[in-house]
Image (cartoon, rainbow, N blue to C red; front, side, top):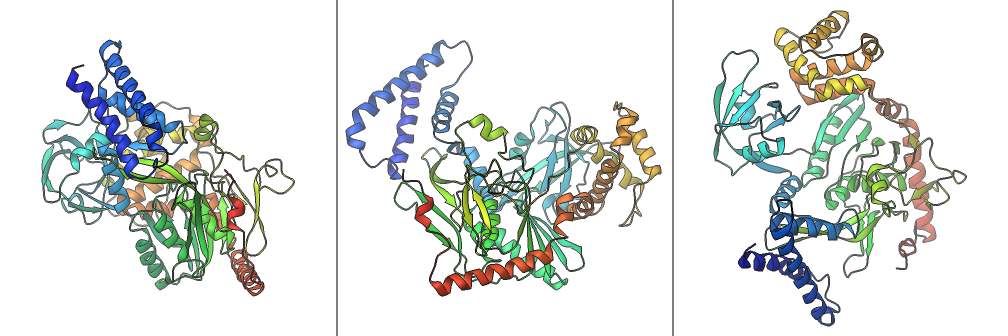
Length: 547
C-alpha cells in the first residue's frame, strides 16, 4: 500500500467522523476525547495498512474501510447502517418514487441463466418499444448479460434522462435476435401495487412500500374504488418493509380523525422527541380491515398500530416484524450516507413497536411470536410484554411488533410449487400458453387438459418430480398457473385478482367488516368519553425507559 493510499484511507475515517460532528451527534465532550480519538484513528489506519500489505486474501482499502464502518455500526443496533454512494443514490430513487430508465421488471433464474423480462411497465420506453414478458435480454450495449447479476443489469439500464441504450433481445417466437435502442425516461415506482374490487362494494388496496408518492397514490386509489361503489376496504400491508415516516402519517390520516395521534418518537438527543398527528385531509369512512404479516415493518407497523389503537378497524394476519427504531440519515462528503438510530417509535396507546434485538441471530431469523393465538393476560408470552388500552378500552400489547386482532397464517407453499417458481417454469409455461391462445378470455379455467400440457412441458425441460407429489400439490399449482397466465396476458392486477381466491387472510378479512364497523363506532364513543373527562389515552413519557 503506498504512502498516499494510506493517507487517503486515514482521511476517509476522519471525513466520516467530521460528518458526524457536523450533524451534532457527538457535540458534548469532543474536546476532552480529542487526543484519545486521534490515537485510535492512527491505530486504525496503521492496522488497515498492515492488513492490505500482508493479508493472504486480496483486499482494497475501500472495501476494508466500508466493512469496518459496518462492523462498528452493527454493534449499536440492527438498523444503523452505512450506505456508499451507489446504495445511497438507489435509496433516494426508491424514496422519491421514481428514477430514469427503461421501465422493465427483469429477473434471472440462476447465475448461468439469461436475463429475462418479467413485464414492461405501462407507458414506459420498454412498453412503447413492444418488449414482451419472456423476452430475453442477451446483450446490453454489446455486452453479454449471462455473467451479470440483476443488480448489475439494472445499473447498466438506468441512466440520465434522454440518454440512449441498445439491448439485444431474443424472443421465443422468433428465430433471430434483434437490437432495440431505447431512450431513458422517468420511470415511476408505484408503491400501490394494485387497487380493485374483490367483491361488489369491497375494495382491496395493496401498499408495497412507503415512498414519496404513496399518499397521493392512495388518494387516487380510494377515489377510483369509491366511484366503483366501494363501501368496505381491505388495506394490504403484508411484506411492506416500510419507508418514509411522513407517508405513514399521511396514509393513517385517511382513516383516523384529524388531530389524533398517529405515532410518536422518543430518544436521547435534542429534537428526537416528536409527536405526529393526523392531518386535515379527506378521510374515508369505509369499514376497514388491515392485513399484516411477519415481513410488515416500520412504517407499515405505524399504520396498522395506529388503526388498532384508535379502533378504526381490525388487523388480520401475523405479528409484524417489530422494527421501531428511527434512523437519522446524514449525508457524507464522499456521496454516501450514515443512517444512525436516534430514537424509537411508539403507537398512540404508548406501545413500543421495536422488539428485542439483544441476540441479532434471533432478531433476523426469528419473527418473535408463534402466533398460535392472540396473546391474553394469561398467555405465556403476554407476561413480558407491555399492556396498553385502545380508545375503546381493548387490551393491546407492545414491545414486539403489532399483534393482529385475528391471527391467520398464510398457508405454507408446497415444496414442489416453490421449485417450479424458483426455476421460473410457471412463467415460462404461461408465456408459451398465451402465445398459443390469442383469444384467451378472463375467467378461463385450468383443467385436466391444461395440466396434462403443463406436465408435458415439464418433461420437455427435464424437470424431475414424483407424480404423487404433483397430485398432492395440484390445487395450488393450478391457481399459480392460472395467475401467471393472467399476468402475462393482462398484467399484474389480473394475477392478483386470481391469487385472492386462494388467500386465507383475504378470505378471513371478507367476513369481518360488520365487526370492524362496530369497533370503529366503539372507538369514537371511547374518544368522546375521554375528551369529556379531559383524559389522554396514555401518558406518553411513561412509556419511555428512564435511560
